[in-house]
Image 1 (tube, rainbow, N blue to C red):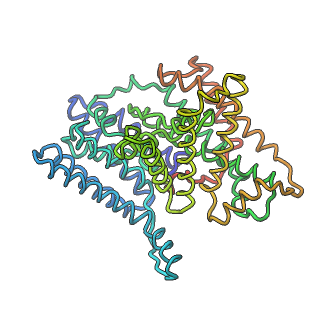
Image 2 (tube, one colour):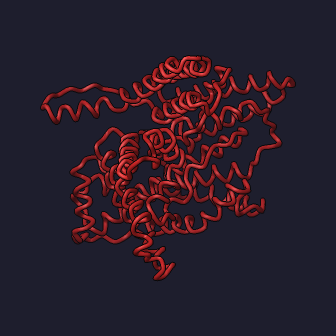
Image 3 (cartoon, rainbow, N blue to C red):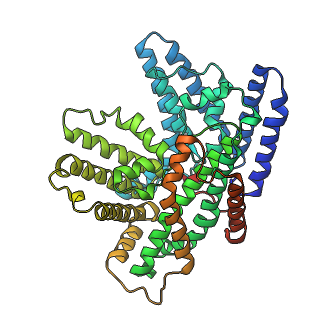
Amino acid sequence: MIFSTTLFLVFFTIVFVVYWFILGNIKDNNKRLKARIIFLLLASYYFYMSWNPIFILLILFSTIVDYIAGQKIHNSNSQSQKKLFLILSLVTNLGFLAYFKYVNFFLGTLNDISGSNFFVDVVLPVGISFYTFQSMCYTIDIYYGKMKPSKNFFEFSLYVTFFPQLVAGPIVRAKDFIPQLKVNQYFKDINFQLAANYFILGLVKKVLIADNIAKFSDPIFANPDLHGTLSTWVGVMAYSVQIYCDFSGYSDMAIGVAALLGFKLMENFNMPYNATNITAFWRKWHISLSSWLRDYLFIPLGGSRVSKKVFYYRNLIITMLLGGLWHGASWNFVVWGGLHGLALIVHKLYTTKYSSKYNFSKLSVSAYTVFSWLLTMIFVMVTWVFFRAQTFSDAAQLLKNMFNFKESVNYTIPIAFIALLAIVIIGHFFGTKYYKEVEEKQQHMFSNPYLQGALFGLGIFFVLLFGSDDNQAFIYFQF
């Protein structure tokens, strides 16, 4: 069930009406809270089962294991027993993730090395990378005393399966979400403008921009041998726009849908293509994942507080390699993560050792900023080649096309591509102020309700007029 379809609109309308106007009329506060939790849990199960019903058993099993593990970790007086139940939780979640996502990857690598032909036909459950990370951070936080376990199994189950962000994030922390389930929500408190702003902005990003601009990127990546330098660069730039608008579009819609039910989810993107260095890029891109990797992998490895800088760089590269592998079962993703890890190390070396010695920013602030931004964006776009290409040979051919200045026969840059690219660039230029206002004031730039209504109507009009009819699944569903 995709957010941009009529089916989801019908589903959510029913959920919205029942949640606010039927269950909201229950007089007893405790009964209202319990009824709403159970109803949203059932709705979330139905939402997930609309893809493949059998995989709900996987979520149920993981939920039961982590709920029990959380209780045991908190109640045990023995450190060894606490660690035992934490390991049980991690092994369960990582075991499911390893089998369903990586078994064919490892078998394929083994086949390449040994010449064998092992193969297992494993269907990847939608959203497994997201809900396993959520479950794990729950037990880890309890183990380190950062939160107490939920005493209500249905509360915890809803945290794991809350349908707006279940299949593609943002990755939610239990300590941020579960307390919201204990508050009686009232219909009058919904910020409809903010929720609609998120949802319609996400819809425009996905249907109007991402799905349309895919028409310029998909042919390039499907047949890299047939294209020259100009067309390949257009394809790579198009994919850079596509993946941002597709993924941030889902996140925006998820935040908007959650807000219409009275819940607040964290921002997952903050104008990442405005970044002037790779460190800033990762503070702005897929924030829920990058912060998860920082808190639950990088810092436990030792983070930056290590005796030698080499260990700090080691921790960075391990984190980014595993972050790349999290995205998909392919060595291409490992290379993508590794390149970003190396870039982070180079940036840290520059800022700690060479920035004061070679302070180019003194020459001209604007020139230095433009150069830094351009260098960062070129790096990000070039590494997207490994993220998108199906094979190493395809990635190598695409990179060869980009830098050997091969003539693109009879190829001119499409006007539609220029228009869509301009929309994203302008949106990024103004978006910094927009996100700052949303974060600080929980409102938006266009706070006038009449202007906001006109923009909503214009956005929907353009989606209906120019939006793709393909109802393409979100890119991150495959992760």
